[in-house]
Image (cartoon, rainbow, N blue to C red):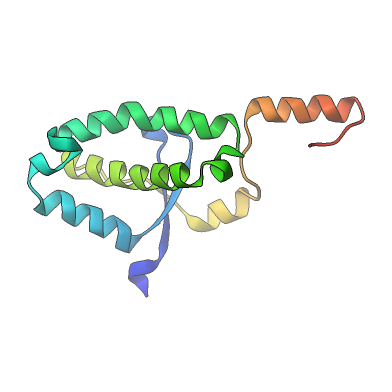
Length: 138
């Protein structure tokens, strides 16, 4: 049972605002892949370092896309799921290559402090303007 315990990864050191929930089982799978598989198997042949470099460019861009409008997470569900999986892979790969530990956030803190899906600042501003003019959120 302990193997499937949910953990929350902070991706802030990669300029990614999204906190990613995962399991020890999923993380251990990525860790084993990075330890046991040949370098050329990753990133279409660019290797583990090349893959990490790609992640460092692509994943913050994906994070910005999903942060722009929270509905993107629902509209582009497969893309969202792939982004989350890539974040877990990136954290495990970074740990493997640099020996720096993955940064976790206590699940209780997340549950206590994050009650709603985060929304973009533009969305909040629109809601404030609507509230000021007598209209509620759409």
